[in-house]
Length: 241
Image (cartoon, rainbow, N blue to C red; front, side, top):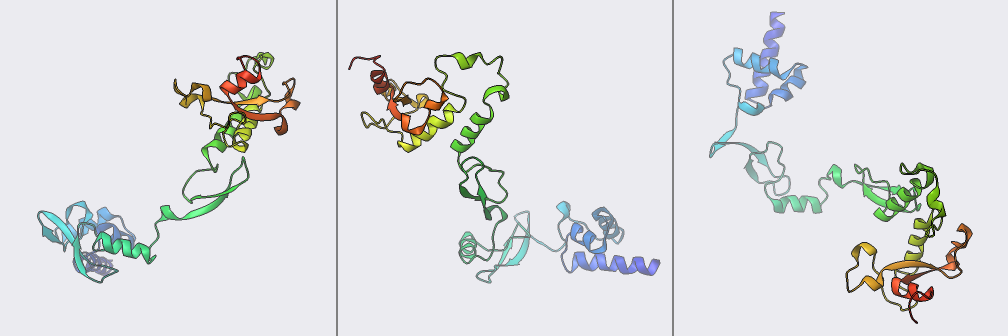
């Protein structure tokens, strides 16, 4: 047992003083805890550096520096980071150009949007499910329609004058995209209500039924066009022609 312990202690000392391995690396090597490694070193009168650093390091301006060799220019350098692979930002950029390394965050994959079905590229570690924020909003609007909405009470909102069907938000957004967010009467680019100012209030985007709405069957694309609020009022005779 003592011979085994002597061999293990000798391995710990050689790994720490000659190979400049850290406590945790030695612990993995001998299948022990790093606290055990520290105790063995101290019992043999070997100074254990703070922050789990190897014994042999350079001290420059009160900082422990680790010697290394740049993987691009093969130049020797000292760094405060033991795992640093490049001597400068220039060499790191060159390594990235030569594709000597790839960050996990930069690995991308192709996913399919559950709303529109379009494929899109995103980071592999990302939790993104939809190709755009618009698709997420439209899917959320569809998911929260009717009794699925926590604010649903008795369906009385279906009797409101402004009600145009449960999927009205999705339909009108599709019409806006088709018409490139442009009023089909005055041919002026419209703006959203949340972005409208006093000068552009008359250009707020709205969706107009060519044939007056009576039931959700009137929400087909050929019966809908994009109008600004000014032209929409004129179409309904609410403003003077």
